[in-house]
Amino acid sequence: MIGKHPSADGFPCCTAEVDFPGKGYRALFGWVQLVRSTDNSSTGAAFDMDPFYLFKDAPSPYAFFGINPTLFDAPSRTERCPLTWTAHSYLAWTPMDDTERRVLPLVGFSWGFDIDSVNRITLQQVQSLTPADWDAHVPYLSTSYSGWVFDQSKARQ
Image (tube, rainbow, N blue to C red; front, side):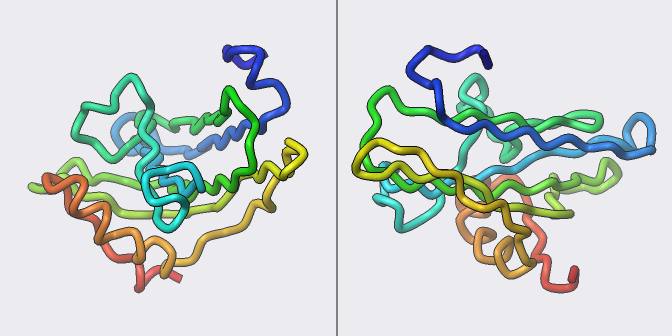
């Protein structure tokens, strides 16, 4: 069990771990996760933030942050209705010696699931995200977290 209600049985969960040899502040990273779901406020037309619910009122784009942080997510619904749920998860770094709270994307991947009309859950294939995928999220991130600077990743290939 993953610590959720029994209605979550059969839904996928995702764990992504960081193994970086740096120590202390040099190993501080965070996970930024955005979700597009056919049951969100835009009915699946746009991505929304997916912050850890305990910190949803904290003005940080990070769902998880720390020394070699682990991203863990176990999305579920109490009712199984047709649904498409896709996450864009990014490992990012915030320089400690910068005068601004800056988010520098390092790597990203897409994952998720679909529920069909007979309530069958199917996993979406995990895919690497491109720099252009991150860049497409920057306007939304900048509006949502005005106290942060989000670097474009076009130079990173």
